[in-house]
Length: 117
DNA sequence: TTTGTGACGAAAT
DNA sequence: CATTTCGCCACAA
Image (cartoon, rainbow, N blue to C red; front, side):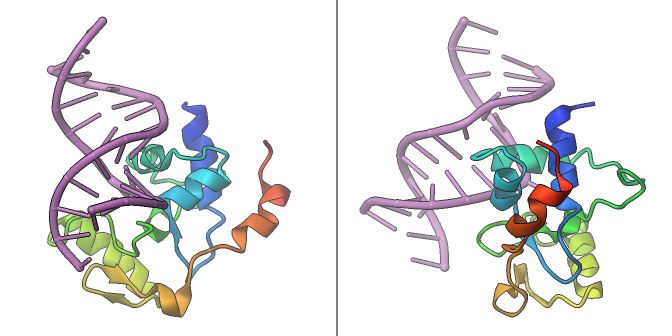
């Protein structure tokens, strides 16, 4: 099991319902600055059963530009979009309304309590 | 070993 | 806005 992936997944589990984070932010919070691409890669292997008996809300991770990473029209795109909307997050086209719901910057304040570095 | 490719990002143009 | 350029780096060919 890849150590870095686990750290990334654990960090993603800290994103509250109704909020989103970016690949880069997750990388930073996971202690892997500059490794946004690695986050994307890890999401490909997210355990569908979850981790530590908790789900890994991969759909709450989007680009720093505020857009969903998948190409509009793909099944993956439709899937993520639906999951976000189900949580009450508005998505226009491929753009998530960050202005309304914002990034999970507060994560930095509670991170040290939940993650062991 | 070199090269191309990513669920990326920031800055410059 | 959109495009380019460069940084990052695991992985496959």
